[in-house]
Length: 349
Image 1 (tube, rainbow, N blue to C red):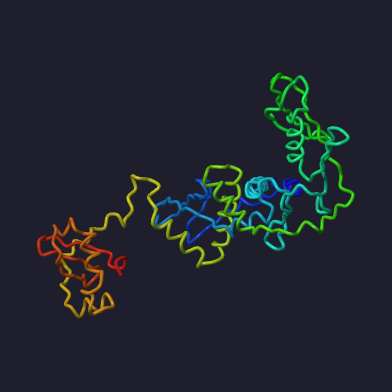
Image 2: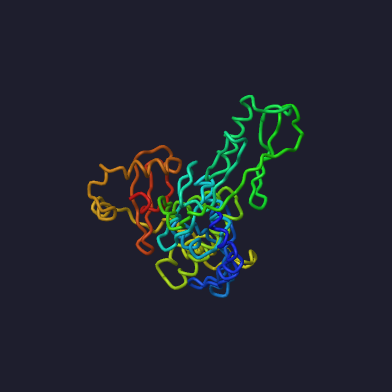
């Protein structure tokens, strides 16, 4: 964790450059994303035939897209929190060239991959060394409580440990004087045999960390949302220069669009709804060609349609297909109803 602190200095610079791009997609002027869980919600405007339209779309970045952002230095706090949660506080370093985090497993033994070690001496027969102070405090407490305590009594808890210069002060609680402040001091000592090149025995893929960041963002963590919003902006930036990437976003804008002025109706909204009266009944051959299977009666198609439109069909399991010769729209009509029912046949195929 301490190895990552250097990257935090780049957060402000990265944020200022990562979220300020104006994007236009197929005539839609897109605003900057705002966080909704792990989603980046974007609003957009467009002028269609003199009518001002407004819309929105949800940009949901995946782990690899968030990894790209984290590798670039954005959202260092989110990265640090996610890695620490995954590794339970184990020291680690970034290895962006290999898309991973490098770390070593926590043990009590001291190796040349440890930059520091910790030391505490109770008496000439009881002293402890470890690469983590928690194990020393545990050993010290066990020895103290094994009949080696004074009038303060046994150690019953610990309010917390703080690093003060090169000493870790653990504010332990004594049974007989619970409000007494007499910390256990554990020395932090530089390891003369430290070799940073040895810190490479374990690795954590960047995408694993990014998925944790996404989970944290979904839970409402604002630091993590910095990463997901930046990833959403990056997706928009790429879509502006890639028609295929833009398609699903533009489709959302089209599907969600409304008039900016509710008193200025969309000409398309004034078009009469097709009532199917001009449609013609289809024969079996035409239906087979339409659905791509002449034996369509033996497929789940009919059951799906009956289930979906049971109310309109008034309980009937039988219906006929109709097709509007001008628009190509498909209708069904049940033998118990008179109305023509417009259907989206593609969703049943």
